[in-house]
Image 1 (cartoon, chains in turn red, brown):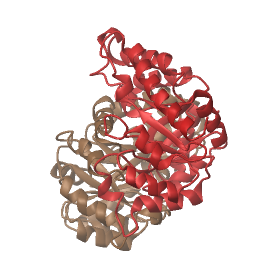
Image 2: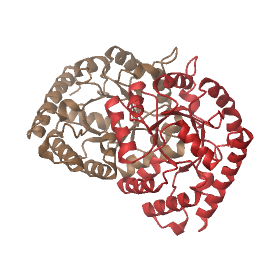
Image 3: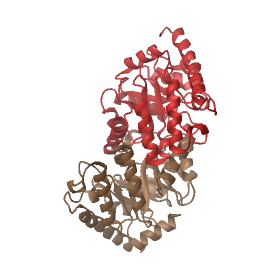
Image 4: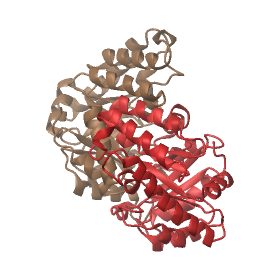
Length: 273
Length: 273
């Protein structure tokens, strides 16, 4: 359990890293040496975790990739979550959200049945779809979608004179605290990341979109680092698929170490380690 | 497979019903005779399906209730989906949605691994989060959240000079057709249901919010029935928990029959059967 933002910051300082590794096990890209089907996904993720855990403060399994293999995939996800070291947060990237009594079930599913520390939540249906996650108690984190990294974010997230994502940030800050609520803010629009940090000075941001989607760690840090770091920068494909051969886990470790070192330099330059 | 809206309408005419039964198996309300845990959920839903299938054109399992029991719950869901008769649609009420390559996995998970005919999708992240569901091919339905039935729908769904839910309806109609896209429109605001039907004349609406949440079948039909019915009205708690005793399935059948008969009258009065 990582009960509050100070505890996250302490881990970031200890590891000199604010790296979150996304576990998106793509059966079309997993090396043949891992086997086939669900077994391959599990072997692949287990070995990647073993070789990267010193460099990461969080792992973010993407539930879609596991659900694709049905209940067998879901069972593999449960086993993987159980072996993630306790000094790393487990973020269930599930994008859940429904009416209140259903969201309460999703919160129970993610925090209790699965054992995640955090879950990504879609805001569309409003407070009663988000509140049950926030009510789950200390050490359970809700990570609300605000400005996502994908091109179609423009379709709805910018809707209105005040863009919808700003309304999500404003209302969200009245619902949760910096100790139980983070926001998803993509790396692909660094100019907006800066204004979002002004609007939301204290909450952690989970930042996807570095690497394959075009963002950089340095640009994200320049725009949105705060006095407790305040950032979890996610990388998935750049680490998972650093090599397509039998050395995939070792190369994933190298790629994670490279990002960690860049982050250590950034934290050092800002006097945070 | 129910390939297009004419095929749905044919089922509605044959059964003289536009009833969708929500499968939200609540362990706190399932009768003791069903057993415990996952086994109780599965026994309960199986018996309810057996006693209601003549009155329903769709079943809507709510994934949260199954995920709450982890992979064992997910496996029970798979077995339940497999035994739903082929003349009923299976709507996976999952509220999924993510960046494109992830939404493609969710579509595969719901349509192929689980075997659902339809899945509910959250629109927040825009087209690239919805498109992969629409691209899943004939007989696969995307049901996009527009105006939901919960009180907090006001937080974001009404955001902007043009309310966000109208923008979702407008853009959604440019993404999908009446043969692969429906919208979720709650029964709790019948006055808006009417204006939404004017805006969206042809697409089916999945309408939650009848019964426990306060809407009525008659008001929904008055506001939004079209020339192919165009409505799937959902009831969950009113049918599932019609009795808390050993006669739960028989009483669920009675409750479903009562709704079916009300729907038959409405369809008859409009010359649709």
